[in-house]
Length: 232
Ligand SMILES: Nc1ncnc2c1ncn2[C@@H]1O[C@H](COP(=O)(O)OP(=O)(O)O)[C@@H](O)[C@H]1O
Ligand SMILES: [Mg+2]
Picture 1: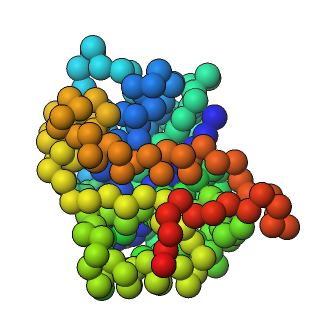
Picture 2: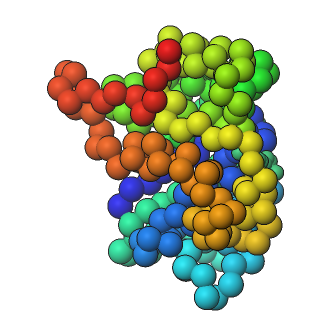
């Protein structure tokens, strides 16, 4: 079972969008997929609840709901035989919450928008992940998703340089596209849309999907992993 945590304390960076699209992708492949929503706004949970019976099934854990009738661990239990767990997290989480959110994570995805404010917030978030949550770069668990990007802009280049200096890979670069908005409104993921509606966007997920399949990098440099795209 693989657990993927999508995290960035900055609101609106694309956490929920990425979490629901990953969930839809794996569910469509026939994997037993669990989506855990920690955000009290419950957007990911609503997305699951509005899905049709005929769509690939997704097991929802609405972790933001506190249910006094059951223990917390019962509420958060993962069904046996689960293949993937995707965790959507709220905005404004504090550094001290990061160790618990990331401890069991096989992969941690940090979506970031190419703006000065977002890059600044992202650098803070990465610092907290490295120093407080003790995520080690060499474990190949941490990947950045540059979201809503226009590639040849100065701000994108500045984001690339910044991440390159930290030796953290950009594992996907996603353009700004209405396909995400349309899919979410129908409780679908891109992968469930008609190809002509989303083919170009789906193609941009390929490096991310490949990175997710990469095993942790062995300490000592053997089998070092090249970032999914050039940061130059
Ligand atoms: N690549 C994208 N293209 C267009 N709209 C996007 C994209 N990524 C996110 N959005 C939109 O931006 C808004 C915020 O995204 P969301 O995933 O809810 O962020 P977060 O969960 O980090 O707060 C949503 O309305 C979402 O549909
Ligand atoms: Mg969200």
